[in-house]
Structures are given as structure tokens and as C-alpha cells.
Image 1 (tube, one colour):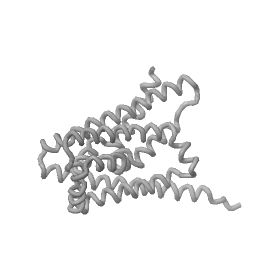
Image 2 (cartoon, one colour; image 1 turned 135 degrees about the vertical axis):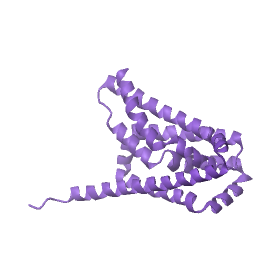
Image 3 (cartoon, rainbow, N blue to C red; image 1 turned 90 degrees about the horizontal axis):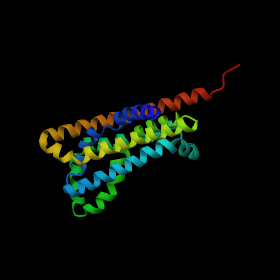
Image 4 (tube, rainbow, N blue to C red; image 1 turned 135 degrees about the horizontal axis):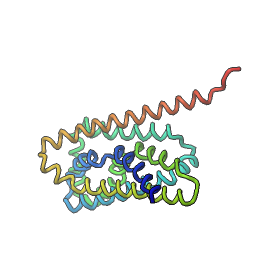
Length: 224
């Protein structure tokens, strides 16, 4: 049991800091402002469920999947960071286009929920390349023995479930929190969050480039 608790305490802070459900809730509120409360709650549940699947797949199969397709962690960070940065820039610099898009979706909100639940709300906004990288790194450190492996599995899975619960609570309550703080403060926080997301995407790309450059230098033969 102590090993499971230790695994949980290792994974939960690491995943929570990179997922940041509270910050993501403001973007969720902006993107879904044209939906009814019932639709928001349903969408929050879908995003939480998809985020759980992404975290579990990354924890337990991420390294194997990347190796199978020949994808390096650096390539994942560069591509994923670019997607995060571009989507954040779209939110930050083109609010008019975002509002027009919301109005276009208003007549077919049921289809819009299915369209945006996984992309972009789950991937890359909620559990993007940063979360995947952290989860892959956590899963790669799994023990090899049976009892310790089971405890590690329980602790890591519990952490992913707890993060998914935090996402669900934060996202389903996003509109009420936004209503309490007011429209002006909500827009300011949403823009600030989008800017921070842009910085996160840029940092993820930088980390990927550093990984690629380091790998290239390591691959060069040492002159005799």
C-alpha cells in the first residue's frame, strides 16, 4: 500500500501542474460560451473521460507506441508544442473570428460537442504534449517486480483518475465561476491564460529542439 501511495504522490503533482484544470477551465468557458449548461456539463464529462484515456495510454503504452512508429520524444514535443502555440495564438489574437465561429456552431451544437470534445479541448488544450511527455516519463520508470509493479500501477492509475475528476469539476463549474468574477475579468483571465498557453507551447517546442540537438551531438562519432 505504501508503494501505491508513493506512486500516487509522485504522479499527481506532476500531472496536475502540467494539466492545470483551473487555468484550462477559463479557455473551456470561452470556447463553449454558445452552449447550454446541460451541454457544457456533458462536454466536461467527455473531456474528462478522453483526458483520462490519454493519460492512461501515455502512462502504460506511450513509450511502446512511440517506439513502434519511430517517434522520438523530441519530435512529439516539437509537433505538440506547435499545435498548442498555434491554437493559443488563435485564441489570443483573433477574438472576433472565435466569436464568429461560435455563432456558426450555435445552430448545430450537438455536432459541435462531438467535434471539439477530443480536439482541441482534450488534445492539445487539456492533456497535450506536455502531459503526454510527463506521463510517458513516469510510466518509463515502472518497477519490474510483480508486487511493486502492481502497486505502481494502482498509484499511477489513481493519480490519473484524480486528475480526470479535477478536470470534470473545474470544467463543469467554469461558467458559474466566470459569472461570479464578471465578463471583463473573465475575458482578461481568458486572454492571460491563452498567452500562458502560448508560452507553454513555445517552451515545449524549445525542449523538443534541445532533445533533437542533444541526440544529434551524441550520435556524432568521436574523432580518434
